[in-house]
Amino acid sequence: MRIDKERIQEQNRKDIKSHQEKFDFLSNTLVKGGGDVHDIINKLAEFQVAIPSWALGAGGTRFGRFSFQGEPSSLEQKIDDVGIIHALTQTAGAISLHIPWDIPQDYEAIKQLASSHNIVFDAVNSNTFQDQKNAKESYKFGSLSNRDKAVRNQAVQHNLDVIDIGNKLGSKSLTVWLADGSNFPGQINFQNALQNTQDSLKDIYRALPEDWKLFIEYKPYEPNFYSTVIQDWGTSFMLANECGENAYTLVDLGHHLPNSNIEQIVATLMLKGKLGGFHFNDSKYGDDDVTVGSIKPYALFLTFNELVYGMNNNPQNPYPAWMIDASHNIKDPLEDLIQSLEAVQEAYAKALLIDQEQLRNAQLENDVVQCQEILQNAYRTDVRPLLQEARLISGGALSPLNAYRLFKVRENLINKRGKNSIATGL
Ligand SMILES: [Mn+2]
Picture 1: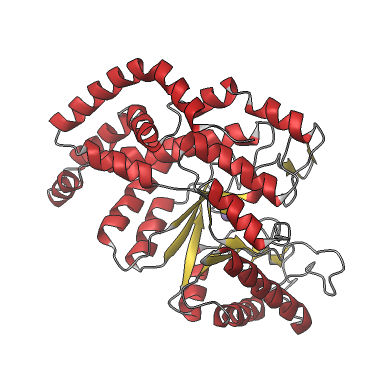
Picture 2: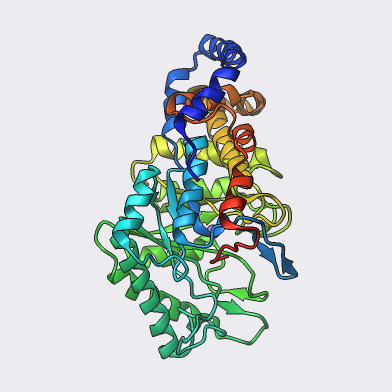
């Protein structure tokens, strides 16, 4: 299913008057306060977030999975789904593939399909956290960190295969997330596990094409419950440094212990030029992977404040690769992703409203109250008309979620794919 541009515009015309009133009011208010509305809208329109291929079907928990109807069951259908989200939001212009599930049969056809939706291939993701059919070695006791060299070799080779696949599609980065760790004290030797991981990552890094980046993701626990080999940003940062200049740390919002100061981690990494990738989601307790901005929108805004500061002040840090890494247990995955994209853009827009010069002056004067006022004035602004304006000029829908429902997208997908179609790679 494809959403016709003309159909989106026709729907927009019905809502344009009320949008214009709200936008004019906000725009005038911001301009009076010294804001550059034009610049903010351009930045919002340019901002693109990758959708991972595993976010398009219903996710499960360890207690079960309730499948959603009309899920994409092939790579082609996954690309079509991202195409639908991108047509409506104009913010999802990239897909992130998960290997081995998304290996193309016909590379040229897949590239053409993606390009017909204006979608590029973002980071490719390897998977050594479960055993694949007919695999010689098992990852039950770790992959890149495994004490057995044969297992490590298999895991390294898998990553090299993933680079090869990504290269044929035009990807420029590989994301490595390891489930490696231990479930019980004494189970592994920490130092050996870390050293093996370092050596394996170096083997992968050496095979990386020159214009590629390696993203090293960290996570404190789960699926292992006692220790994780790459448990925190410091471990990832150290491993990335030892690999070389094209290796970076990847921050996933859900991969921290409760109350971690993620915005400070972002600031530290950007100062050091090592924040390569960023995964959006939200959580209440652990790596809950729920809709972005649904639980802690203020924390997301504070993180964006640091990201915006870093993008403006840290030329040593590359432009980060943005991705939504969420799981949808009970919502329509596409509706959930539309909500997440809106939340990401909202936090970004609010961070762009912060008067950085004013904030710096207040900091220099140790005016703590004023510092808070500056942040919260930006946060309390309803920026949604800015998001709508950015979508309007890009050809997206004023209200993507309304359009999705009015166009009966899910009903169409179910008619085409059936009620029992199940997505792979979750
Ligand atoms: Mn992630």
